[in-house]
Image (cartoon, rainbow, N blue to C red; front, side, top):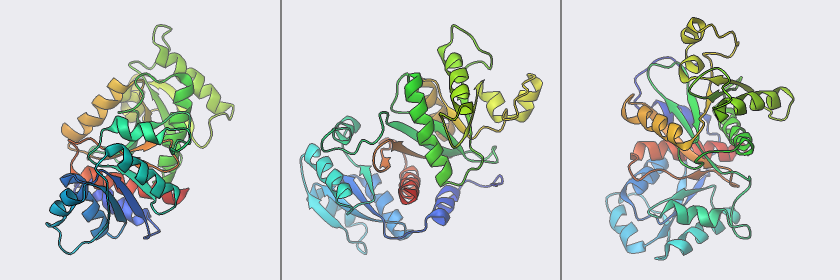
Length: 305
């Protein structure tokens, strides 16, 4: 579906093509951040969304002076907790399509998102889901979890797969092949992730996990390379063709995600799934391009609901 190409602007171009609505609005909590506002400006210039900026008005306006042709609704709020609460309310009132983290601690934002009375939590498990692309691969990959779940239980992995499937459906992956990634491709009673892989595969075969094909355990090489799978004598029809990488813990997810960005020069988008709307929670070290990609991905998933 996707040939090997120069990476510049390919993801945002592809995601824009999939967006069918133009009346999206982003609620940005603590919006007084240069990179965040740069991404918001680019989202507006690409015609994919407007934004409501909640935060310190003077700081927001100081940054926006760089972009004199763009105007936004600004809600002044100095307290980060209150800023997040106001953004959540904007989403609940259907004034905003998605929620985005600005210059506020992720822990503060998620504390209010998961609040049982006033928050946005929709699933027992929230998870970070990333879409990535590197020049050496002929397809987009989805991986989880690089930022949220430290050592997900079997039950949590079921929910994470469901989140990944929604993302895969949004970017038109079909069929969706989920690979349970471990250090080895054989079941080892001392490695819980290999036992979980067999259980998840069985649950998928029994119809408990729907909308995808779950297989594994796979090591990363035989999940992504048909040749590697052949050399290792793996006979699964899904070996080498995996689209969704279910990582066993946060260390492996985080290292792989950052390796794609910093070593492979790949492009990425990352969002939090499991709330009533996708949440853009990027690292402060992420570029405005990653933030823009993440905005587009979140909007795409929100419009599919």
